Length: 626
Image (cartoon, rainbow, N blue to C red; front, side, top):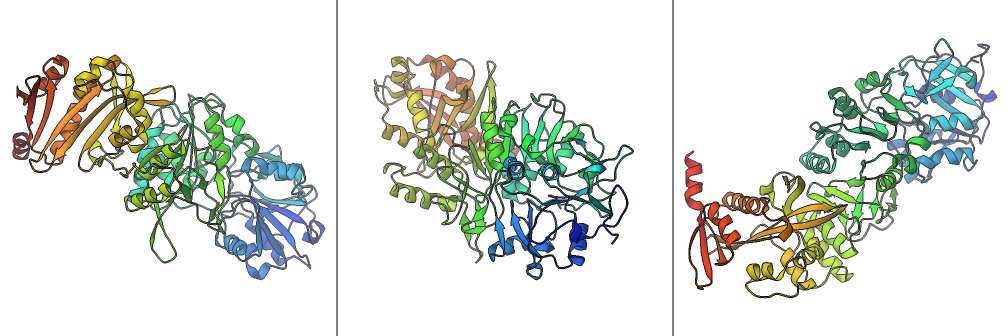
């Protein structure tokens, strides 16, 4: 190991001239951990003791946190990462200081955590004497500015990145040149649940959005399913291989960004050598300090900002735990709250929490990560007011502007089916859900992998999806838009009220047996029901009775016909042999829709009605022959 030397005089500088016992040092972050410096410090500590090492996530074996170095080092982690640090915190040998990533620089600058030295990794200096902080600028730049002593491992393998990444050799008090590969973060293994989460999140991402993507398999899955999107941008605390791949394919081009237009903005990179080679000298990727990248105010300057973060567990009201498993401190706050808040403030922004619906406990038993009450000791990182969407492999829960009752029903819908009934029973004890709400939500897999479809009628974009228990209020609002004629045609008498209990019963559908679909669009950010279609299954005759109603102002666009065809598709897939409807004779538009779609009419039991029937068995038989 070469000795530490002065960049100005090449004079050898021993560690005890740079550090003193009891001092606090900052250690470089993520994939830029100066392990050679730490190894040399251990070997040449010369009586130094009780040096506090503070850092955020470090992609390293974190050997300095091992018990055998307890007299030399104590650890104060601003983000817990790696087994050695996690064990040290759990055993009480290390501290965890929870903080937002954007506020770490103020801890250094305001002398809340005054630094005595910063140990960092840099690229070799260029002809003007400037080194690059390379793949990790984040809070490293603040540590360099605030520490009176800067000690650097010069690594020829470190990429020279663009942005605010440069430090002049005159700012470095001692350095050594040790070339080591930049540590790589292997791609996580995917499973079916995570793949499904990726598909659901991709549905929420509109073309032209700017993204923040975290680390881990959920985020990698999201990036995999954005390949058909257009004009995406990046403003993210980190980027990984998936971002580089989407930039190479042109999906991410940053053309629609409204802040740092044309540039991928991040504070650190972590992935494979492909990523490190991609950012090396790349003017299209710029790295900035965390106080800039993770500032909620600056994040919000990007319109259609989509922040995608994960969690350990989420309760039914939307409270997010992401840094602990019960009382076990596990990771950290990082930039989650910064980006969730920034996206919420953004015009058209979407703050998203995405996580698998289940995990396994220490005994291998399956447990729900969607919970009625948070695990005792679990810390709320993101509040119930911050999150707009929660996504699991079972769907998307929309929480913005929802009451506790509505949130509960939305969250139960995306929980694992094995836990839905127990969750519903539990929240009844809190009076969050009324006693007449009996049906736990179910899905309609025949609609496709994301349980919904998109249509455009007369230039308006609609979503076709199942009715859900949380649609109770929306269905009430839909009912009260009908005029008297519509109510008479649909219900055959003058209905004047849609009570909360009645609406609840209509949206609480066992979609495995009966079917209730709706077309919705957006009024601003609010989802509005514009049409409802349903069938009721009769097991004895293997048939179903069909009915639907469309808002008066949206008729004649094809919504009713599409609803009918989608219901027919589901009925055929389920092996139902016959669809039928009873329609008033004077309801000419409705009769026309049924008859144009193959229904045969005859006089019903009442002279005021016609009975219409569609034989599905013949069609199913023909399809099998084909």
